[in-house]
Image 1 (tube, protein in one colour):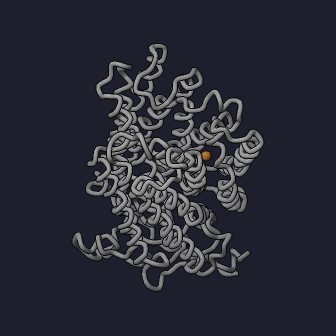
Image 2 (cartoon, rainbow, N blue to C red):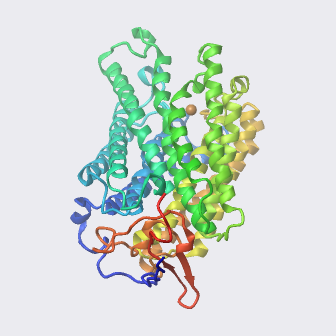
Image 3 (spheres, rainbow, N blue to C red):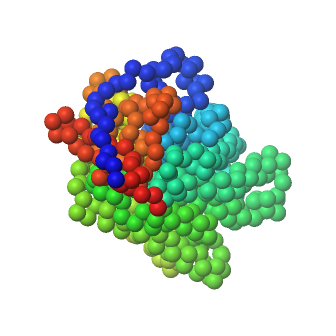
Length: 564
Ligand code: CU1
């Protein structure tokens, strides 16, 4: 048995040539094939979309602070919540983690130079941009008030504003961006893993992205065709969904949710992957139940296709069908709970450091659990009839989406930020912005569970005076979040110019991205230093050097760490 040597490649350094400065000028970015640069371009794009969606949310909440004496008309209110939902879901949450963080991290986590099809990757980004442009055109044409789900017969007949066709066409194009990214990731994971990286040695974030890609490829085409059918019906008066033309509006709901429930897992699975990385890294402990976490991702991806009817309990669907959908929906709680228990077991007796990314990781567990548990009330037919289309649904949805996806996204963003830009963000202001966002989030949405269960219907411009208090608390929470997100943006952007240089491995991580410089060179690893992968979460290989204040990473040694 040979002993390994420690390689002191880990102290603060800014390598002269890295992917940020190896080529200069705007064109070198717009035409880049580098997955890291494409990831950062997505990051800029989705941040802008988040800004638009967030502004609309603030407008909605501010309107509700004043009750029925609000500042905007009922029509504008409807357009505002539609803009909020559509921008957040289609432009931010769905592409958020896979396209921005996944693009940046996936090839490095696999120890490879790039994704399998770099040109296709750039093309996917421009498809995203084209989809976003159509959303902007929709706003320019007077917006739309259908809600982000484009429900018929509303969207086929009575909708206000001329934006229905451009917005659905935008979502159609965005679907292709998502499908192609999924294809690219699947090919990359199959073909380009580092030497030694067998399937059960890939990091759990990659498993999350892989399971997501399966859904992206199988479910997204259904949405694309549905939206195309809607456009065909609206432009050529062919009866598909509109009863006046002989169509069936409930058919739209079946088609829409056959995609959009699995899409909930397009949003959640990558988030769960990020959280697995965060919990292991900041507990400095191997992840508990690796295979259970990996397989539960696949189980969720498959089961997610069989539950769409839980959105149609009150549509006249038969009780037997409802019962089956209800049962399968509750069954998905099993693989989700497996993950939560494994994360808790990972933290047990770990050496936990409460850095900003870990705070977001822990927030995810708390908020996602609340979102999941309140999902049981909606999955149960009798209680759903009472809660259907109330603020309870709004609160549940936001606990799952914001609490789930957005908190994991923010955790991953802080986690990989030093790797992206080679700079450390200010930890103190990072934590302060987390406090505002986490507290603000709960203040915004917890009262919505209460008013929803008391009968406050969603998507209404006005409300009865008895709900005033809940609405006002909720609006104050929204403003707190706005403060938090503004500070977060300031913290991260400032670090690019004023942050301390980041070491290769600032957090003591064990996966391959921490074994290359921050920021990495153009092809991720210096020539001749391409890694051989061992166990992804072996913390014995990472040592903290007190004197130099940095982590050292021992390279993989097949003699001390045999393959499976
Ligand atoms: Cu669903």
